[in-house]
Length: 244
Image (cartoon, rainbow, N blue to C red; front, top):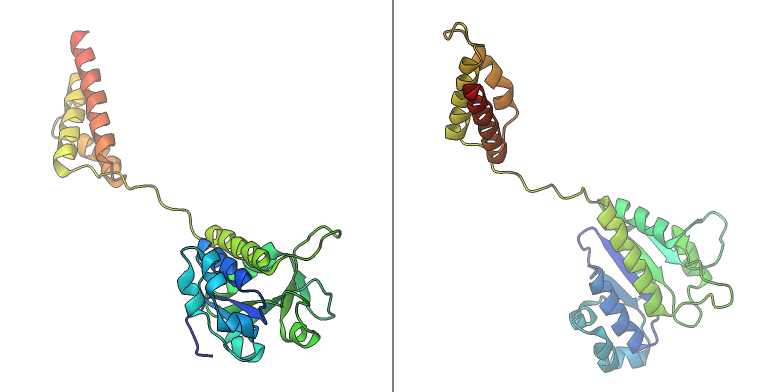
């Protein structure tokens, strides 16, 4: 299987139902995923994807792009971490919730490809396939109905991966306010000077009081709105002093 860019790959072993593949393709695209592989799909699925296309709905291209390696070993050969979806408990294998598996997959996928492996619809992963996985994960379903449909399982893990990716991204920055222009800052300086003169603070106009008072305002990189508010406030106070 050719090496691809680092990311998250869904590996479906021996898929038997074309409708499941179509629904899985749609789920992957819903949550921004596209790297997936089918290992030994049933002859019926391999021969005709018509039913799959009907359920893919705007994700039909993923059906054509799916890799078809002959074995699990080849499907995950370039993967640094492989998590298998299975409810079995295996000595030496970590068990993760879907959310925990997704969070770790996203961390690891920053520098390497990771795989999420699903067994076939009837019997899941074989013992040998479970042993091939580095960790295991299962959905905490009700014991009365513990088995999920393959497409549902793909949807659930794709959703958790989407949440984990969004949580790992830094929050978007607020839109930067337009900075005050030199002309607006000069207007502010003159307004401040006029107020200080009116209030008799500038006993010696030649001193550097206005410059020193302006320094922290310049250092703060005032926005246009802030500079205009300063000018309006200073002008109002200046007028009020003049009326007194």
